Picture 1 (cartoon, one colour):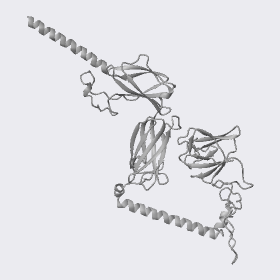
Picture 2 (picture 1 turned 180 degrees about the vertical axis):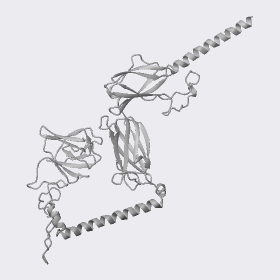
Picture 3 (picture 1 turned 60 degrees about the horizontal axis):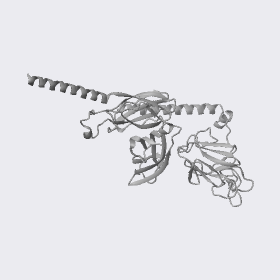
Picture 4 (picture 1 turned 90 degrees about the vertical axis):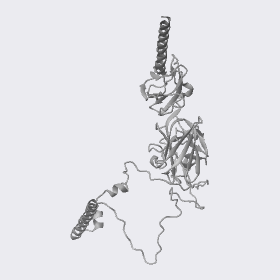
Length: 439
């Protein structure tokens, strides 16, 4: 009887221990509410990643955590949406002391805040400030060569201002674009390995505020390197050799005969029209004149008469002004005093890039510069210029250039600036175009 009572007590103790362990295990995987406050009334996404787990949910080495009630696998959460400045998030937390990475993504700007959340949850919740949204969700760097053509392959390394290093590979399917996620805004270094052990390094600036939620910039490389043709918008790719081989001989014959018949019909129509016009006494030149088309009059040159020059060598082909005795003009790229009678107003003179030798007069108190046509100085031919790149303002009798939040920055005499008073002869670089400021 005593033996039976001892056995009964052991069974009761085992059952109680099982209930306690089950309760702890259930509490470990239960969802926990987190009160969140954000600085703007916008739409957001949030997701969580449990510590010690890779991005695709594969468990890393957890042998040191065995026997403390942790589950064998805990996947990442799917992105959830909320709107407004206050929200309550449902987060799956582990046992006390465990932690997870919480990402809050601002749909409006493309920036995100990444925070570490530990258990137990602080009942006061989590408050995010404006400065917390300092990571750019998606960064694209286009590697180009040979006048802007995308390279076929490369290894691209991006080191951001927080010393985080990310690597992306370029292959023919990426069209020269290396893509990176979760990059801290600010100055960054891009290193490109390409071709036959070639290396290129360039400094870029990743802005927190930008025109597009996906930040995109271009890094050119030099030297011989394989490139690919970038398809234009709406352009269909050419059929492959396998697809061409599927075409039957009857299809090719029908296409060929159709082309021949169409060409013959066109010839018949043209010959008939010419014959009809000649029968009515109408010539091609006369018909064009009746339609209002003015044709140049041909005057035969007298035998032995010298041919007139096509262009006056004393007139500048860029601005139309007359050159001085040294053959220079007011728009000459090299720094020389302007000849008498030339324009002396404030202006930008292109010295390098797509707008070399172009002159832009600064006729108003504020001049805007960018790729869009609504700018005072539009630069649509330079793809490295932002839509609204810079502005030049007349302040207290001097001209001051400002960076208007551009992607690639504004440089004066080789130095990157946010604003700078200009002096005659200063070199201003906007994108890949250089100007000389003159007054």
